[in-house]
Length: 164
View 1 (cartoon, rainbow, N blue to C red):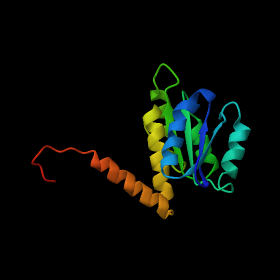
View 2: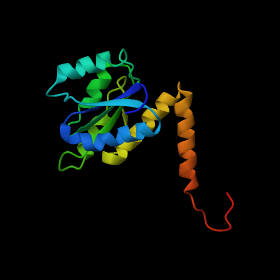
View 3: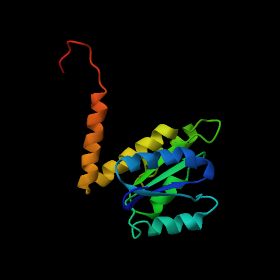
View 4: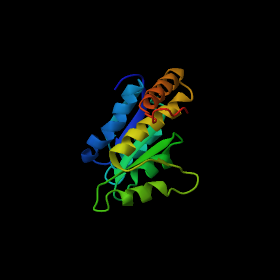
C-alpha cells in the first residue's frame, strides 16, 4: 500500500479479500495509497455508515466496493457519501456474479455506482478506473497512466507490412 491514502476498498466478507486485493495491486503500480476492510452492509451497517461518512475527512477520494449475491454494499456506500463509488460484482452464488452485477448496476438516479466486470478482471479495472479519477487532479498519476497505456500499446503486433 504505497503513497498517501487515497482509495478505500471495502468487501462484505473476508472470502472476498483475495479477489479485491487485485484492485490494490493495480493501485500500487500507480503509487496510489489504499486500504482494505471487511464490513458487510447487512451484518455491520453502522460501521459501513461511519466509514462512508468519514471517508472524505480521512483523505479518501474514491471508494471501491466488492460484493456478491444481493450486492448491497456499493449502493449503501454511495447513498452515504458523495465520493465516487466503484462497484465490483463478485461470483458468490450459483449465478456466478450475474445477480451481483444486476444489483450493482441498477442504482436509482442520483446515487450512481460505477460498475465494472465480475471478479478479478473487474477488481483490476476498478483499480485502473480509480486511478483515472484521481489523475484528474494528480499529475503524477496522470503521467503513470499515460506510461501504462504506452506499454500496453507496445504489445500490439500488426501484420508485417501494415502501417497504421
